[in-house]
Amino acid sequence: MSTKPETTFIASIHKFLPKDLYRMKNNNPFTGGVPDCWYSGDSCDLWVEYKFIPRLPSRGNVRPNLSALQLDWLNNRYREGRNVMVIVGTPEGGVIFRCEQWARDISAKEFNTRLVTRHALAQWIEQEVSTGWIKGKSI
Image 1: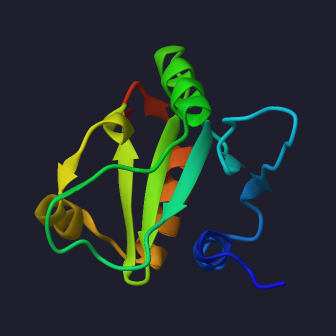
Image 2: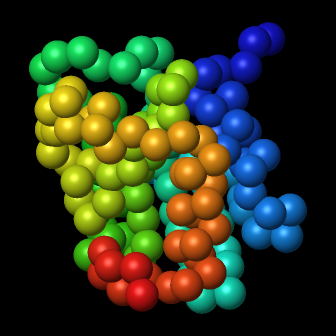
């Protein structure tokens, strides 16, 4: 059985994370909508839903392909003050969607401008759970 591109993408980010940074890959067939990974650090938790697209968009708009259950879970937890986000991966890297950005389109140009490497995504995750978060702003 081959590994899905999304799973490979997540693993490619995790290899850059410190070994002692706690992470849990979620897979619950009884509860839909829970993000793919949970990270826990000294200052806060972080829930990340990962999506993967096979190539960079060249035109049009991009919106993470989230199910209704995923949208509900992310939106409800965000409104409770939880640290949640979506990362859309590509072969070249990924783009972070925060603060309910996951429910809106962005242009292909903006997507490509916001694209960062896997290493940068891992550094961002590490910093996020180490330095804290308040309603969409790193502290």
